[in-house]
Every structure is written in C-alpha cells, then in structure tokens.
Amino acid sequence: MTNTKNHSGKMALVTGGNRGIGLETARQLAELGFTVLIGVRDLAKGEAAASKLGGKVEPIALDVATPDAAARAAAEVERRFGRLDILVNNAAIHYDPSARALRPDWSVIREAFETNVFGAWRVAAAFAPLLGVSGHGRLVNVSSEGGSLASMGAGAPAYSTSKATLNALTRILAAELRGAGVLVNAICPGWVATDMGGPGGRPVAQGAAGIVWAATLPDDGPTGGFFRDGKRLPW
Image (cartoon, rainbow, N blue to C red):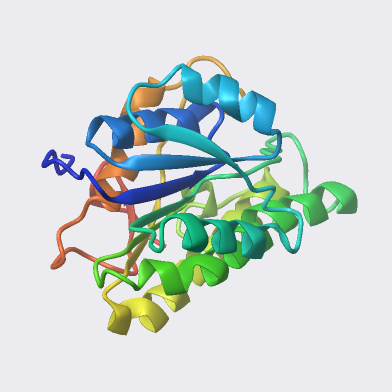
C-alpha cells in the first residue's frame, strides 16, 4: 500500500511523535529515507524516542496546545532545512468513551479541542508555506471513524466532536492548498493498541501504514478525503 521508493533528502514532521502511532509513523517514514522530525513537548523524551529508531530522526520542540509553538517550530525548520515535504498532524488527547454529552466536562472538552482541532490547525497554518515549496507537499490529519457523522452515536463526545471538526478542517485545507500542489487527507488508523486506544486493538504498525500511505501519495492521488487502509470512509 505504501509508496516504497526512496525518499532520501525529503523532510517529514510528525506531531505527537514520541510514542504510539506517531512514533511508528516516524519509524516507517525514516525507513523510506525521509529525514523525520518528531514534534514533542519534552525534548528529553523525544531524544530517547528518536534514539530507538533507525534512519535520520530527531526531536523538535512542538507542544501543539501552546499557541505560539507551531510558529516557532516552523521558523526553526525553515532556518535549518528550508522545506517540509510531509506534515502528519498526529497529536491528540482525550478519548472519552464513557462520557456523555448531556453531562459535559467542559475542561476535558476544551482541552480536546485545543489539541485535536486548534493544535492541528495552528500547525497546518504555520507549516503550509514550507509544504508548498516543493509543489508536492502532503498534509495528513490523523483522525478517527469516531468523527464520522455517518456512524456517530452516544459516547466519546469530546473526542468525536473534535475529530469531526478536524475532518471539516481537512476539507477546507485541501481546497485552499490544492493550488500549491499539497494533498490533504484525513486518516483513521483504526482501533490501535496504544496508550490511548488500550489493549486489544490492531498492531501499531498496521495503523501507521495507512498514515504513511497518505503521506507518500503520488501527485495524482486523492485530496480532501477520509480513509482507512487506503479505502474511503463516509464523512
């Protein structure tokens, strides 16, 4: 499913990249030859995570919930590398399946939107100029079928509504970046066995593979879509 050609010389950034799906996505991209920056809140933890991976992987300070962090990180990437070929908006919090919308915990809901929506939005806006440098940029928003209106029901109100909003943002960004040659898609990795997903899910590598597929699409690939394992999901 993944484009397996060598991508040496290209740059990728994965937010929330020091564990789980983010870390595995970084590993798979590094295997394809990308230089990978993993966006982390704690650089020491990022260094430890990067040291476990092969290839060219290093951490960059990027707490997506901090309003000016994305702009600072983009300035650093521009100064050091002058380009970014792939941006994976992976950082996310607050999967809340036992919560109910009629008993809202506003602090949890606000925190979920601050990271899952506003964080991804800030990062996309900050790095969009760098993604457009090559004319072949790829922006992947790691979403969830929990954000699909077609199948949404009770439970996980903070997570589901934030991911539905991320899906809407994906459509808008795809339209705005089409002229720059940047393909923008939302990817559901499925229920994956991570700290957030809990035990019993599919292997992390399998979930990350769908993200890497979207990150390495050919120029005539889809944009503005919602996919899992390379297959379209209903909005």
